Length: 127
Image (tube, rainbow, N blue to C red):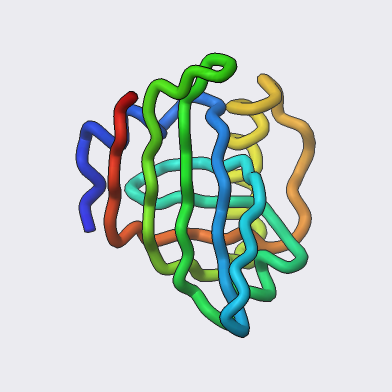
């Protein structure tokens, strides 16, 4: 799917609050994540249960919102298929973008794999 321009303009660069939902054995797992959106794909540096769940069931949901205190301005829901990427050069590149976005600096190299989400559908809500 091509992500609509209206969605890309919301999620591309700002350090926004996001949650990744995975599921295995009919049990959902939702966790906050930092992400990178680039070239129509969402990428997350993560480990543990999220990786285990993606290995067992690659279908995921991601919720991203922009809020100012209790006032939510908009939210985007992405549904897609995740895959685990272990290429160290690619992981390092994404790590640099995520750290620049959320920390304002390059904070060393990432170790371990990342999750890359091919987005299948998007929903936007404005409040």
